[in-house]
Image (cartoon, rainbow, N blue to C red):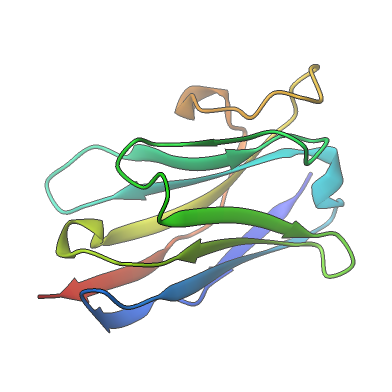
Length: 127
């Protein structure tokens, strides 16, 4: 079983950048497909980005493609979400999640397929 702790959220102006971190403990992140999701006030949680167990496959929501980037540092057992060119509509609580698909090349985009979740970190983008 893995435990996930997000950090790096905060308040930033539109056009700015933030890097979120998801520190894993209990198991190595290479054992899991890792994903980022977000939930804005009054909205359902939505997919943002994912990386396969192999690390070679990634997937992004259309709304963040070209602006956000998911990466992994196996030595630190941490997954990152680099967010650039932030917009007010990116304001949300961001969650890190872990999945153990059989297919090591699958970057899981379906929320229900994730087994482990962090507590979330707030990102607020001011206009």
